[in-house]
Length: 117
Picture 1 (cartoon, rainbow, N blue to C red):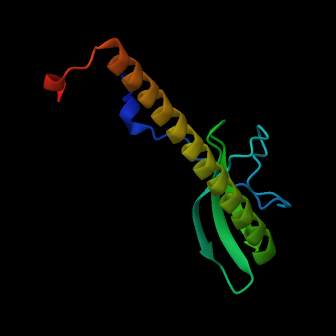
Picture 2: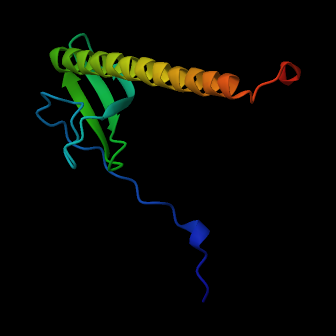
Protein backbone atom coordinates (compact mmCIF):
# COMPACT_ATOMS: atom_id res chain seq x y z
CA UNK A 1 0.00 0.00 0.00
CA UNK A 2 1.41 3.37 -1.03
CA UNK A 3 0.79 6.38 1.17
CA UNK A 4 0.47 9.73 -0.54
CA UNK A 5 2.28 12.37 1.53
CA UNK A 6 0.12 15.12 0.05
CA UNK A 7 -2.87 13.78 1.95
CA UNK A 8 -1.25 14.71 5.25
CA UNK A 9 -1.38 18.28 6.42
CA UNK A 10 1.32 19.88 8.51
CA UNK A 11 0.60 19.68 12.22
CA UNK A 12 -0.98 22.84 13.53
CA UNK A 13 0.16 24.34 16.76
CA UNK A 14 -2.52 24.90 19.29
CA UNK A 15 -2.78 28.51 20.37
CA UNK A 16 -0.52 29.12 23.33
CA UNK A 17 -2.35 29.91 26.51
CA UNK A 18 -2.24 33.55 27.45
CA UNK A 19 0.83 33.92 29.61
CA UNK A 20 1.57 36.60 32.13
CA UNK A 21 2.73 38.97 29.48
CA UNK A 22 4.67 41.88 30.81
CA UNK A 23 6.80 41.87 27.64
CA UNK A 24 5.08 40.48 24.55
CA UNK A 25 8.12 41.41 22.43
CA UNK A 26 10.24 38.79 24.25
CA UNK A 27 10.07 35.22 22.93
CA UNK A 28 9.20 32.66 25.63
CA UNK A 29 11.32 30.03 23.80
CA UNK A 30 14.57 31.73 22.83
CA UNK A 31 14.37 35.03 24.74
CA UNK A 32 14.75 37.03 21.52
CA UNK A 33 13.39 40.56 21.82
CA UNK A 34 12.19 40.59 18.19
CA UNK A 35 8.70 39.07 18.60
CA UNK A 36 6.15 40.91 16.51
CA UNK A 37 2.39 40.69 16.00
CA UNK A 38 1.03 38.91 12.96
CA UNK A 39 -2.53 39.85 13.82
CA UNK A 40 -4.36 41.68 16.55
CA UNK A 41 -7.95 42.63 17.11
CA UNK A 42 -9.99 43.98 19.98
CA UNK A 43 -11.92 41.38 21.98
CA UNK A 44 -13.79 43.90 24.11
CA UNK A 45 -13.13 47.37 25.50
CA UNK A 46 -10.22 46.24 27.71
CA UNK A 47 -8.68 43.21 25.96
CA UNK A 48 -7.00 42.35 22.69
CA UNK A 49 -6.47 39.09 20.85
CA UNK A 50 -2.86 39.08 19.63
CA UNK A 51 -1.08 36.51 17.45
CA UNK A 52 2.71 36.61 17.79
CA UNK A 53 5.75 35.32 15.88
CA UNK A 54 9.46 35.14 16.72
CA UNK A 55 11.68 35.48 13.63
CA UNK A 56 14.66 33.90 15.40
CA UNK A 57 13.23 30.53 16.43
CA UNK A 58 9.94 30.54 14.43
CA UNK A 59 7.86 30.30 17.62
CA UNK A 60 4.26 31.35 17.17
CA UNK A 61 1.68 31.92 19.82
CA UNK A 62 -0.71 34.44 21.12
CA UNK A 63 -3.61 34.99 23.40
CA UNK A 64 -5.90 37.59 24.84
CA UNK A 65 -4.12 40.38 26.65
CA UNK A 66 -5.19 43.41 28.66
CA UNK A 67 -5.08 46.87 27.10
CA UNK A 68 -2.20 47.87 29.39
CA UNK A 69 -0.06 44.93 28.21
CA UNK A 70 -0.84 45.68 24.55
CA UNK A 71 0.00 49.36 25.11
CA UNK A 72 3.44 48.38 26.46
CA UNK A 73 3.89 46.05 23.47
CA UNK A 74 2.98 48.88 21.12
CA UNK A 75 5.55 51.11 22.82
CA UNK A 76 8.21 48.39 22.42
CA UNK A 77 7.28 48.08 18.72
CA UNK A 78 7.55 51.87 18.30
CA UNK A 79 10.98 51.86 19.99
CA UNK A 80 12.08 49.02 17.68
CA UNK A 81 10.85 50.94 14.64
CA UNK A 82 12.80 54.01 15.74
CA UNK A 83 15.94 51.90 16.21
CA UNK A 84 15.52 50.39 12.73
CA UNK A 85 15.10 53.85 11.20
CA UNK A 86 18.21 55.10 13.03
CA UNK A 87 20.22 52.10 11.84
CA UNK A 88 18.91 52.58 8.29
CA UNK A 89 20.00 56.22 8.34
CA UNK A 90 23.48 55.28 9.55
CA UNK A 91 23.82 52.53 6.95
CA UNK A 92 22.60 54.80 4.16
CA UNK A 93 25.08 57.49 5.17
CA UNK A 94 27.95 54.98 5.33
CA UNK A 95 27.07 53.63 1.88
CA UNK A 96 26.89 57.14 0.41
CA UNK A 97 30.23 58.11 1.98
CA UNK A 98 31.82 54.97 0.53
CA UNK A 99 30.40 55.74 -2.90
CA UNK A 100 31.64 59.32 -2.80
CA UNK A 101 35.11 58.21 -1.70
CA UNK A 102 35.35 55.67 -4.52
CA UNK A 103 34.07 58.20 -7.07
CA UNK A 104 36.55 60.83 -5.87
CA UNK A 105 39.42 58.34 -5.99
CA UNK A 106 38.44 57.36 -9.53
CA UNK A 107 38.33 61.04 -10.57
CA UNK A 108 41.80 61.72 -9.14
CA UNK A 109 43.18 58.56 -10.76
CA UNK A 110 41.82 59.61 -14.15
CA UNK A 111 39.64 56.52 -14.36
CA UNK A 112 36.53 58.58 -15.16
CA UNK A 113 36.36 60.34 -18.53
CA UNK A 114 33.76 62.77 -19.95
CA UNK A 115 32.53 60.07 -22.30
CA UNK A 116 31.63 57.93 -19.26
CA UNK A 117 28.62 60.22 -18.85
